[in-house]
Image 1 (spheres, helix red, strand yellow):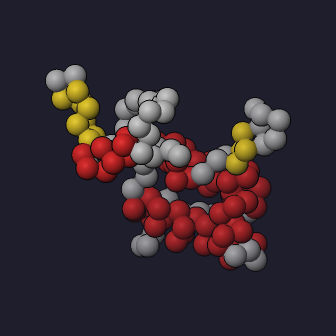
Image 2 (image 1 turned 30 degrees about the horizontal axis):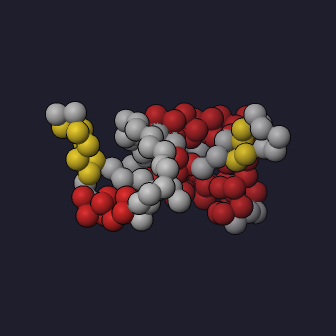
Image 3 (image 1 turned 90 degrees about the vertical axis):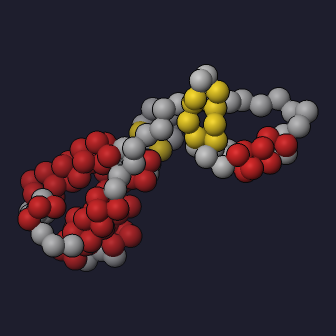
Length: 129
């Protein structure tokens, strides 16, 4: 069970955003060994980035290639977010990308679409979505 609890560190102590849920989660693990990971919160893509990606990038590629939007999205993840470090390839998720990583992903998709597929994908500033 992996549950993420967000909060802030104040005066060296963790202050969860939802203290009740945090306490209840720990109560379930009473007497068990646990592992705690602490990391700085990553900024994930914005709603506007998501709307542009699905409404423009994926839509244009899907329409041009005769794919469903989900098929186009999955194909882009395989093309650009596959990690071959393990015994089997692992396809990443766009939802896990930071804002900067997502911008880089879109730039790679735009370049690939232009050079390999002959599809022009306008920048977000060039379209209404």
